Image 1 (cartoon, rainbow, N blue to C red):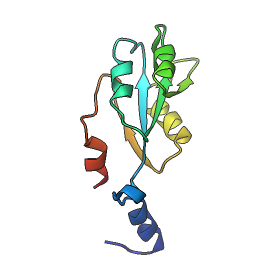
Image 2 (image 1 turned 45 degrees about the horizontal axis):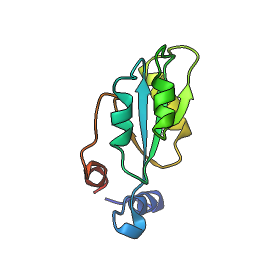
Image 3 (image 1 turned 180 degrees about the horizontal axis):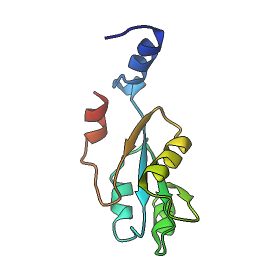
Image 4 (image 1 turned 90 degrees about the vertical axis):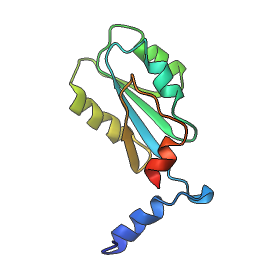
Amino acid sequence: MNTGPADENRDDRLRTSPEDQVVFSVVLVAYNSADVIRDAIESVPAPHEVIVVDNASTDASREIAAAAGARVLALAENLGFGTACNRGAALARNDTLLFLNPDARLMPGALDALAA
């Protein structure tokens, strides 16, 4: 139900036709996630943005995420999951966000289904 111009604009962003595809910013919060982060990032199809907020990992999580093509925000200390989510959301280039755990994988078509 649309209640005004703001809702109409939101509906326009959620169209899923090829010319108006919803583009997500997918935010992952990592802490010592080197063993799983690459698979999570690689499960996000183009053209969706991937942002990894690293909560002061002591492993190679940051380097692996960057090499996999994610934008990486490396925090100097572990600020906790919620704060890291907010930091990642603040960097997002798109209006539609998905928070994905680094040990999760998106199935083909999952983002299209979410946008429908």
